[in-house]
Length: 122
Image: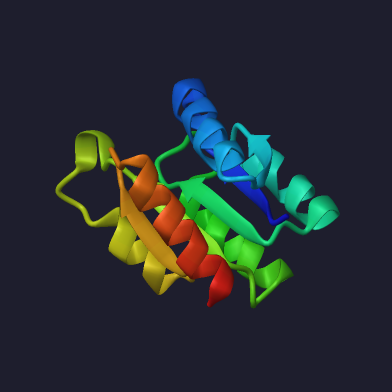
């Protein structure tokens, strides 16, 4: 069973992803921010990280960069709806800084699970 670390400041989005992933038999670790996620990543060494981009304290791009410093081979999916600054392509930037794959919110269960499967197998 693969372990997935989900990082999102929105409790509803965290729980939705947890439910989708657990229904597909993934073990899920939840974090509310990049700050709280980094110690979990170091301790748990999940097979995959899914991180939101727009978060307070430590945004997803900074989180991706720090995870890459800890483990250059980490598998990371960045997700974002763009928020109020939708005109900026945050997901493209996340890929430039090391995200393996990106998903734009809102996404369907099938899209999430397909991205997770592709990324873990890569």
